Length: 63
Image 1 (cartoon, rainbow, N blue to C red):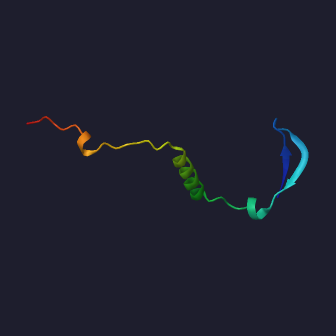
Image 2 (cartoon, one colour):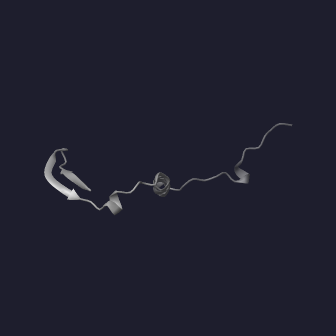
Image 3 (cartoon, rainbow, N blue to C red):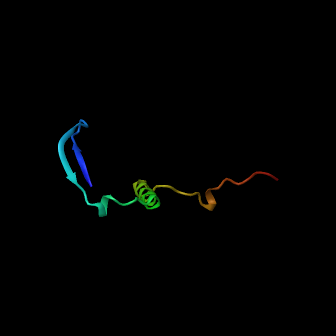
């Protein structure tokens, strides 16, 4: 597979790059990509969440 090289402005430079079909010619696995993105975003979270414990829950005043 050959692709044209473009610069940062988006114009072709006249150069060509040959890419391996074994790596770049495959059909992507959408579910594997989803799982990787989900794990990446989960690792970016700060993790300072907290659940209320039994003593912190407001009890009812109903008689």
